[in-house]
Image (cartoon, rainbow, N blue to C red; front, side):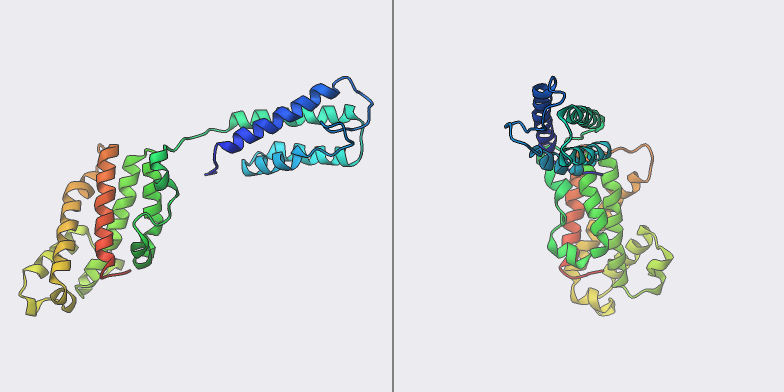
Length: 260
């Protein structure tokens, strides 16, 4: 998806207005010497700026029209020829600008669309494999695709879940076998119920951390992940925001002790 600020449209329109002014000045000057708006023998100083704008907006017909216009001005053709190509250029830019669909991202949500490390640098460094889904979750939230946002967040949670499961040193939880949430969580609950001397070494050393992590995962599974798997569920903005914040808090907790 092409991303740009609306000011490029405004600037492109302003450049077109100057070209249209030039067209008006020379419309009856069929064989006069090629001149600029200032009256000097000229190239068109606005052309560089307009070319930059239409290139950023990816308007291929207009880009080609500008290249043709450059060849006309460079060869010193009469203004009648210039008039024809100026008219073609303005029509091309107008038509292509009108064909572009603009989607506005509200100012309050712009950070969700643009920021790379929405969960913070610690999570980005510890869980690089989750970076794409975190970024996409933010963009979906900014574009009001709230159910899609939650789906991406569930991918992020699954990455955290598998890393958590790996600390149990149980070969039955091999990620390559795609163990279910319930299977890993069941093992986590069983581990917490053991006496400390019987727990996996990492769990015995950080019992508070693993207890918090397991509790958060259980809450997410019951409240969000299971309902998300049903087609009739659609999330509102406030619900998606709650999930976003909960997953962010969970991954930030994991990042203090674990990494992928």
